[in-house]
Picture: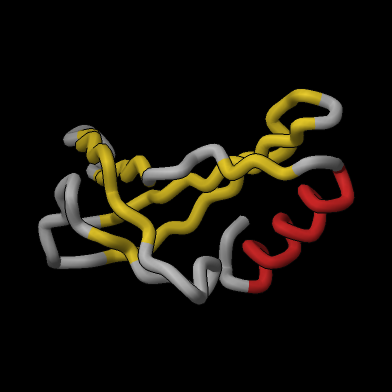
Length: 91
């Protein structure tokens, strides 16, 4: 099944969602809340899957991750995180 994961970057100054990025992959494993996702975007940690929504018409599985959105103090820090995510295959 096709899996879509979203990562949101939130800027604290000025306060707004800076960017929403996504990563897609295929898997035969049934992913459910409580499992963890390993990705190079989080090199020191796994991120917990806290929600999963299925779209049978497409079909795909949308995953919600813990600690989203990620908060950063300013646009420069947000831009740096965006570059890190893009370098790990997020778009």
